Length: 234
Image (cartoon, rainbow, N blue to C red; front, side, top):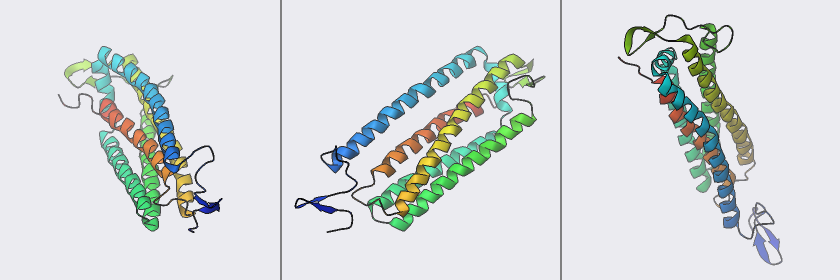
């Protein structure tokens, strides 16, 4: 008998199988279904923010374009590449678990977390720049004499630009919070992988954690062009 099973009345029983599930497949399907329901609520949550953003962008497109141009698109593009790479390492970690490559699985989990930390570090640099430039909504906000890219000689309305930055901080801030949660999840996954809990027969937590990580990455794929690439060229 392998270490992952124990005898129960003449039959083998996987200790990872919870008592209220009849089979391992049923448990895996229930876990996946639960995560997809959760991600559905997240889609509705971020969907409301995207709708608000698109409405204001339609009303104040020139002002939003001027505000967007003040954000460092190079840093945003770097973060996009970082998250795409992190999605790859998540997939490789799951594949390593499926093929009994424990060392590779651990390495890919560590790399995923390093990519997540790099993303947050770059985002911190962006936020610092906005504080220095007084582009944070509030009493100290300043956005004077900023030209609208597509209308030379016309200047953005500071109040409308402030709406853009409010949405920018809310949407990217909530996304960063989800990234922090993801790092917490992957810290536990790394610990469990180190303890040898994941095998080719049982690696459901890795798959569920991967679904969450991919969702966070996809949200950023939409945030990047919507916030950073508005009307960059005349």
